Image (cartoon, rainbow, N blue to C red):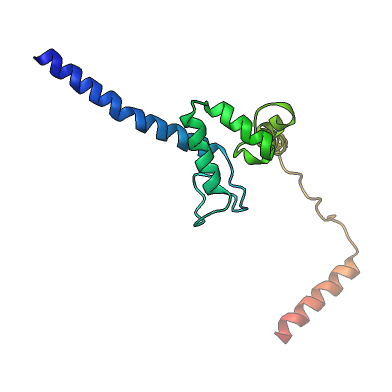
Length: 156
């Protein structure tokens, strides 16, 4: 009797998990596509009521999944119809690989430039000593300067 109960529980779990798996894959497909209404959100996230683009796309995705198509097949069909812009993330093929590589390359280049600049500043050694005034000078000019400074002190 316990074997039969265990089999029933297992069957119930499998039946309950099937719709969840189907819903998960529908959400995954909807998240991989950008809504074409201009909102810039994914088909799954589009929050426009009665969206003229998102609602038909959701319906088509559900129908294609019910027919047994895979996520890749559905994405390929939408890409063929709308072009690359329908994908929420660029593919890693052809010229699109630059969209993936450029941000990382820019960060690495910035780190390299900063390390070179900071490295040069750190190795500069002692700061240069400013030149000192000559010890000898014209005694008449020194006397005139001392008189003017004294006059300024008296005026203040």
